[in-house]
Amino acid sequence: MWTRDMALMLLLACCLRSAEAQSERRQNIWDDPITFKTQAQDSCTMSITGQGEFTRLRLSCQSSKRSYWCEYVGRPYTCGPYNKNPRHYFVQMMWGLRKLHNACLAPRQITPHMCRKATEESQMVFSSASFPRSRPEASARTRPAPQPGGPRPPWPTAPTRPGSQQSVRVPPRATPTARAGPPPSTSPTESNAKRVAQRYCWRSLQGICSYFIGLVGQ
Image (cartoon, rainbow, N blue to C red; front, side, top):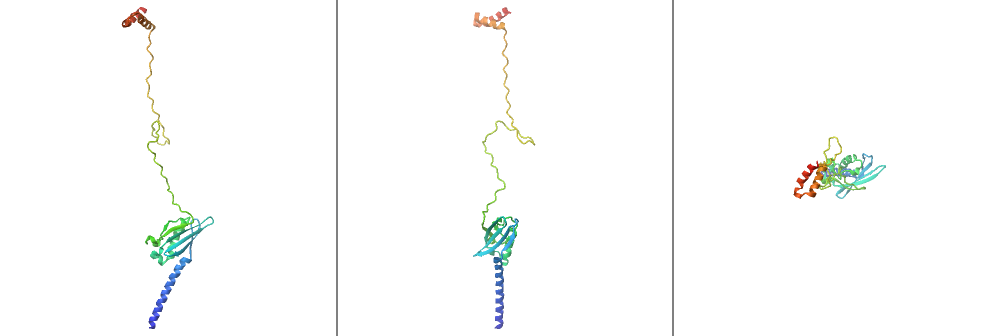
């Protein structure tokens, strides 16, 4: 009987010691914040609190020029390795945050390496911050394509030679116009013979009359 009571007492003591050790480990992560410095030499503090089924991480940073804070919320206890060493979970988060100039500009979802195989529920998700986080703009903006039917140049553009910077517009060639030749010259004798023939001869005989009058006048 005594031996059984002693065995039960020893078993109870082991269970209490294990519970105390686990409680000390959990209390250590709640009461002992994690501190680090960013690339910009901002002094940051990671404070972890538990509210119901969610674990809340508050990140506060300060330097001589600025101060800011942000919060992450998640359920890391759904990851098995976290329950064995919860502090190391947030230490691994700190390794990534200290590489940034602004610790609150980390990814919106953070999964430490020790829980990379766990479900998404174990991630710490961005909740709020002391400044607005805007999405990064595109590095290059696409230029609008030219619309068809726009104004065209009055003459075609000649192709550019290698090494030339601007294209040369070639005006259309002018079509040559036929030059008017000088009027045929008539001698004074012929003009006088025609006038005399038109005055004294029939119209049908004016050609013959002007011919003979021309011969007489020569």
